[in-house]
Image (cartoon, rainbow, N blue to C red; front, side, top):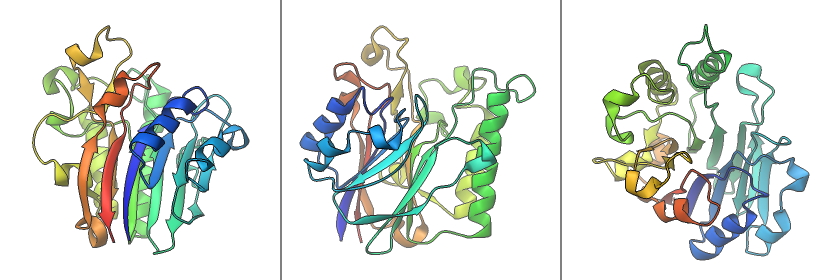
Length: 262
């Protein structure tokens, strides 16, 4: 089986349903994982996506915020939905394909603006969420698994536009990078995107605050595709669809793709 997968923080699946359809028509990934859907499951415009061939959906939703969904052209059944760090948030869903591959779709908390859990509860929640992920993967090491999503951390120096300037900015602080590294080690995960694109600046998010995001290019790589070692070498063709950031009324994230030959 060969399939192409994409992950995208859509920032409201209902508001940007047209952009989702555009991606499905023009890029046609076999599996599309969305985060920040901001919709109850029953109000996701599933019929429009089904008409484009995405017959299977697994999702967890909330009104107005969070929410994750996987749309698939390939038969898929729900495998797991975890309330990480017991936050009561819809931030994880997992689906399993007929070949036994499990796809985890995560939306890690952003963490607020102050990188100090004593001053900022949201930052503490983010670290706790990552710690729960780490402990879970250590307790039951995953196999034949792919992990994607908006992990809200740019771990490498070349995952941000300016490493030194962002060291004290949430999403690139050393403590966040360390927590994410422990999650990776806990599941022995391989960063598929950087396996395929090992060198150079690479971003998937550009702030709405920039008047000309493309020219300023002050991006961060917050969106990730990982795989367990038993299938990581089957991955190739990783890319970021930067153009999607420039679509009309866009998300501030761009889709990230990878293909797996399994």
